[in-house]
Image 1 (cartoon, rainbow, N blue to C red):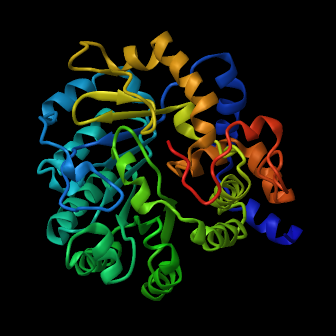
Image 2: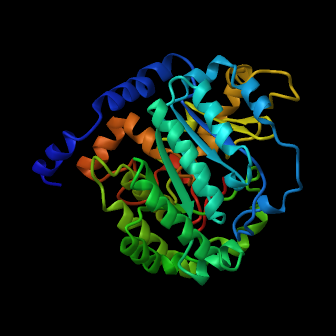
Length: 395
């Protein structure tokens, strides 16, 4: 990378965020437990899709926390630390009180800087109405808003993966409506593509379509969870096959090659390439390992979507703070960091962690290396956590 290009990129960075994050990750985290700054709320476990890689739609109906119950939980001071909130599901738009729920979160989290919404885009009118509602609320509070719409292919390919005829056309209508809203509000919108056996070889068509439409896009390699999407039984159907290896590695290499100070995800993709190709353990930092928190519509609390439940605020009669800082739970999180995180392929909020772990990212920009063994075979400590090449690490 030319020094002139690097210098130009350096002038566009929010250095306050990077410096504070570097202090948190490299100094504060060594002195004690960091308070959670990233929160993901699973607002429901209801879904109107029949996705090939997810079993949420098969789950039996369960009572969801009401708006008032969520509000009571939010009285906990721990939520005053939250800077980034993601609302996910299930399908978020199936929650009738999603707008008021977002308003309540905005009111209770005084340090919130960014709110994100994830949707499958199947209900254009409802989604656009609630997005405009949330946009007005975010604008009034000075909170950045973003929305990611799931899109796993063009036309029939997306319909097949999502298990719903006409799904692609509904998503297109939602995206067109979001483009109209973007003319009146300042927010980020884009689509997310879950890469799996069924659609791996259709990535070029997807990228061409998104670029023609002027829609930002991102990728996530399919993962497998015991909890949350509960899809271990789907692995044989959607996981990569030996014949997928070359295409998968080529995609990762291409995404990794686009490294710059502004595209921190290039680090993650270079890391994934080494995990899948060389069997190396994960090098990409994850904010959920240090400062993340999950709260779902049942009152269950997790450190991340790959962790076991660490408690339930309703059943246990304990606050989220009690559960988050519980010594036994923290010991479990440390166990995860040593034994589960090294095989995790999730991209959840890795951009946040990489900006905070600036020393590691700077080395990648300068050398192209994401960690030990980055030019070849896995080292001895990495080999014990090795993933099967061209197969998704189980989370």
